[in-house]
Length: 330
Image (cartoon, helix red, strand yellow):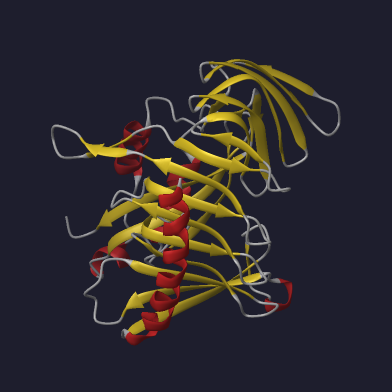
């Protein structure tokens, strides 16, 4: 325990040094405005924070520095390195998050494959420790990092009462717009857990970390029962993504302009898989021009029905993105 607490203080000092030297590199920056829920907006007046993505101007680095700042006082909200420039980011190394008044909110460590590893620290707005979580990892026989289940080192409630130590006790897990809380024994959920997701509430029963049953109650009183068979699953295309990509490859047609200009690269199409599995509102998020994006939308519309996404027993509308790799010179 002492090791973790001592380390947290040292890492804050390291952070100050890191932020001071971050501007010494030649970089190009791309900026966007976002609301409190993370949704992008073109209007600065309606934005809660600003996101800046730094790209190495010389093209040497294959990673991107992500920074977010609160607009109200220009204080830093997030700082980290990502493998990709698009949200959701794939962080590597240390990622820092801060409260609007400037104190540290969390410090997490990520592997090269963007999995949480090592020690993570979470603090309350008053700068008091909330919890420490250790994410064990070890290389397998092929040298690939194997991520194990997290170990909850310690948890304090908002009144600074220690409620959990060494994986046993009571813990509340906050995810920003949702939370869940209940008992743990040796880092495994046990008994009754309850929580909220937005305006929906739920109660679940666990046995050695395995979900036995759950009931979700929506704001309007509608109730959904679930277990492991319909707990949570993303939208799924019949036959899998490989079959979808095969359908796209067989039905995508290059325009004459795309062929004559030797277009190659990735077109990104975003759409909604609704509660019935239908594709709704497809839009081009990344275009290569010469009609490549419009053709991507046309093909996606023809792909047919999906198996809808499910969250705690309820079918939901889910936003989905598909990258279409093009090479008109083939």
